[in-house]
Every structure is written in C-alpha cells, then in structure tokens.
Length: 136
Image 1 (tube, one colour):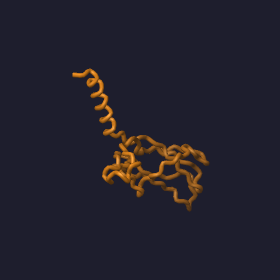
Image 2: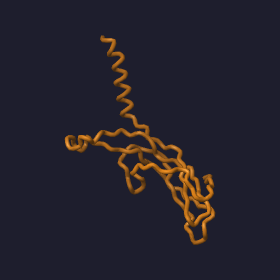
Image 3: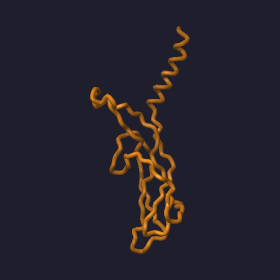
C-alpha cells in the first residue's frame, strides 16, 4: 500500500469530521440595560448561542437545487426568559426587563421572532449612567 495514503486518509477524515461537527454552544454574555428614566445601567450575566455552523456557499445558487443550499446560524434550541428590575427607576417608568437565557443551542434558520439575525458590531459595556451588576 502507498505510504502517502496513510498520511492523506487521516487528514481527509479529520477535515470531513471537522466540517460535519458544529461548535454551536451556549456561552456566557453580559447584557447592558439602560433606560432614560432609571438611575442605573444594569449589567446582566446570561448565556447566548454562539459558534460555527456548517454553511454551503450560495454563489452558485442558480445552478444548484434549493436543497443543496444551506445558510444556517447558531441559534436557540431551548431557552427561557428571566425578568429583572432595573434599580433607581422613576415611579412612572417600566422598571422590568426580560431577557433570554440559552439552555441549549442548534444550527438552524434564524428566527426573527426571538433572534437578531443581523450581525453588526456593537459597543459593549456602554452605559451613560452608573453601572450595577445583577446577581441572579
């Protein structure tokens, strides 16, 4: 048997395995919540879905059948909502804030009902008012 085959075969296997396995998992994330009517910016520790999902290039979408195209994102499989009170709010202000907590994740189509499907650079840790840490 050809010695190059012993080197090439494991490499092809590793690349195939790496492409087929997704690394879409819940990760820790800090949400900063601030309202004009409240004295504090609340930093909330939660989990969101993040990671790699296998995607097929859609450049040839006119030549390929629809089933061959795949544009999946790392999104929630199971999640729950928690609600916190933002401290220092005026009496007329809505001081409650509900946020998602990722329990498990999957690769799938982005559902705009509960996910932000646009990837934009955002400024993290941005607060105009003094910051308080929420401890669940």
